[in-house]
Image (cartoon, rainbow, N blue to C red; front, side, top):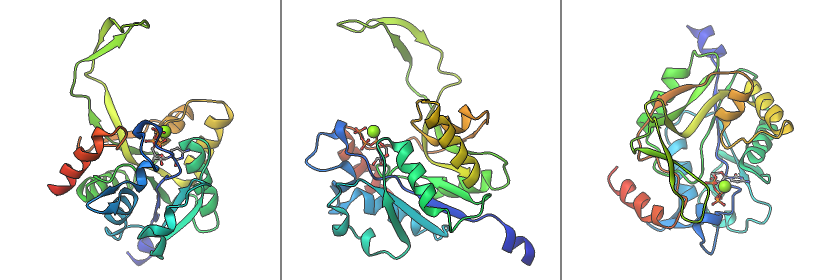
Length: 238
Ligand code: CTP
Ligand code: MG
């Protein structure tokens, strides 16, 4: 048991926060908007770190970020920062680089969007316990609820067809993969100019099949202005 404890892979957290929140059209990047007078970034980080599951945490920040020093997180010695990149995948890769000296190849890395403050600790626990012994890893996801239409290109978009949603899921975060596999998958996918909007897509491009772990559909990514009130409401119900 003792040996098992010592060799079991550890969990690391990466929270990419280097985006500018273009679609939010706010006066600052959306992770620095406030809900109940706290930065979204602070809410997200404390919800995850207070579970006590992580050995360390890396937060990639935008080079022109001048809000970080005002965050609670900047005074939290559990959190390290590094510089982000042009795309989300570049920011995650930069964080993986920054963790290099601290991690073992098989350690788990959980990547979670700064803009998802509504993540629930029960979903995190379920993700980790489901995947802990899995060779590849996976992600929180939710089955698509709405009927889906594919649009034709045009002035007024018209329905080209209705898409079968029975096998379709929304990819959420955290996404949980082993350090060395994720590192090489991201490097390869970026070199090959693949569209990499999440960690899973990089892993898929490398030929892996990440596991979809069903999570709460209210783990929303704050993206457009209306999402801010919605997130405030969701958080008030926890
Ligand atoms: N992110 C990042 N580095 C980038 C782009 C995004 O670390 N170059 C982070 C964002 O800060 C966010 C998460 O990745 O926490 C998800 O990205 P998204 O929701 O697209 O945020 P933004 O890119 O900031 O928003 P937008 O696409 O509307 O500009
Ligand atoms: Mg973006």
